[in-house]
Image 1 (cartoon, one colour):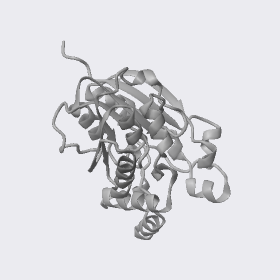
Image 2 (cartoon, rainbow, N blue to C red):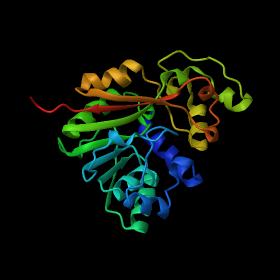
Image 3 (cartoon, rainbow, N blue to C red):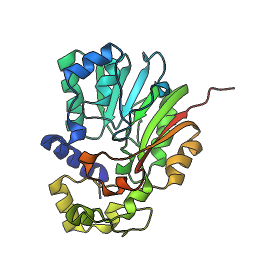
Length: 262
């Protein structure tokens, strides 16, 4: 199974129907960011703390798997030199729409978050990576590639799903509004779908997800060479109708630095 092709098609479909992560920010948001009044999300509801960003945002910034016309354009308006990489051409199209509308200097690149071979070593000062690594089967290459393309002293800001989210039967939760523990961890959608299920997922625009482990999500950053310096948790908002968020934090975010040479 080609997970990249499946998820590319799923997010293209999401963009077509106006999923909330595909709706571009308005001109007022960009105008405010140009005045220094801005915030962005790594997770659904909790803004990233401003101290997690450089005081001077005029840096080379990779918005990794962050298409949709939201975070990338805001950060560009705030002064960063932004490159947005995403697997979905439709999502990248949203970023180009905002850039054209508001006169932003922003680069878009179609690609795989786990393979950043199109970028040279030490190309960026900051990698901004909202929740998206749940859409790849192995998160370790993502961390290694982030470390490689960052300059010494650079930072990785990453959002992630809490693995515990994946123990529940979400098909039943959506249908019956009941939380039922069904799966063991780590969970992979692809392990439990036959060809008919995959076809239905494609038709409905459902991307495939992988839970990963905390060892891979957090320990994997350490193994790649990063030093963790920031952490917070978050929950889905009411519009997401996520039953688990009423009982526990369902997402997490980290700030990790690439050490300076000694």
